[in-house]
Length: 490
Image (cartoon, rainbow, N blue to C red; front, side):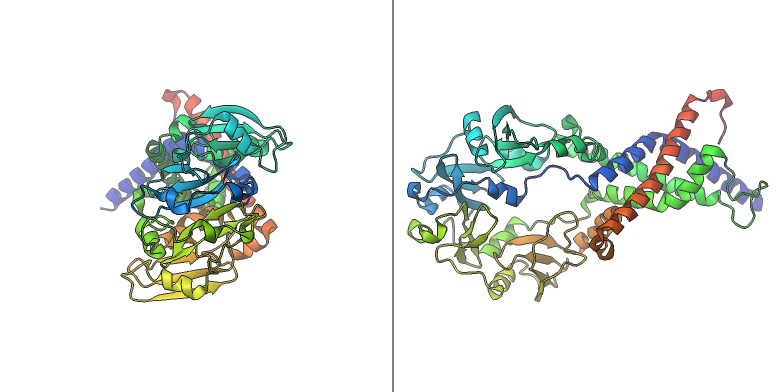
């Protein structure tokens, strides 16, 4: 019985060793790439158009030319759409409609005609309003490229790429269907992302353009890497001797590069596992985590709009208060119309007699979000906390956190000034905050508030993981070059 157990244990160690060896050979370069690119991503984000950048490129609305009532832009809509706004497209004011299916269309605010696709010349005119524009030039019209491959741009395709001619090498992407700017990139972002997000996320354009296939590839690659890391850490513990040391007096049986890999794996193994397991979880395997955006049903209950109308007319939205407005958004909150206006400098204020949003009004509308809940609580956050932090994206403050006692224990974060729902977070979303975001970025309050401390901590973890990955790649290369007949475990 004892001999059988020893034989089984010996066979288990053998298979653990072989499994880790070949899994490590298969994934070693991925580990090395992830650690190196992760260091770049700490300082250079993937290109995205921020709301202040978008608004800064909007000219003031030519109110003298606005003659079409906002409700006329909703002709043909069965219900109030996901989005309705008034802004300029070149020299013409237009209503932009975003349907619940993501479809986008533009309607002239001058004569009510549907606006056709934006030509390259129109895209140039749109880009010319950006404050960074110096000598705008049309580059090309693309369906996909590396920076617009994400499915969030599907409804905006094709895209006109315009170079602004500024010192930063800024390029804008203008949607052909709507004439709206949807993305900006700079020379700095484009260069460094070739060493950051592009290799880290395997953003190969032909692969990433097929979102479902890309997701499966990432899940399998990172999943195999998880098994490689787990088997390596387990093997490292099995081969470690602290009390009954090896004949040489060492705690490890290995020498040279293998010793670096063993000791480095024990020291940096937990960091490696933290990064790779949380990276795998970021792909939401088996759809364990709920989306952070509210559903259409939630948004419609929250707005409580009485059909496809704004509740406002031109007489109520035109006037001195809106003379310098760059954009007017039409929306509903708890059955009452709202028309917040935005200016190029980032300000957003109530427009044309629509009331300021009061916290009590937001709370009353929020009760409709989860009708099956028995109770609801609302608290005001004036400071960030673990579930509302600006480490990677700027968070608005103050914010209302509305919590429900439904089976999913759903939370919402709502801007008390505008009534806009900023995020939805249920029990699974909070688990993702721990399992992915915390373990992947370690954005704990104490570290984040002292940014140099966070940088040092993260770089130390990445360095430890890099030692494990680099030594593993070197050992794998040696093993592959070794003649098969003379091979034996290292």
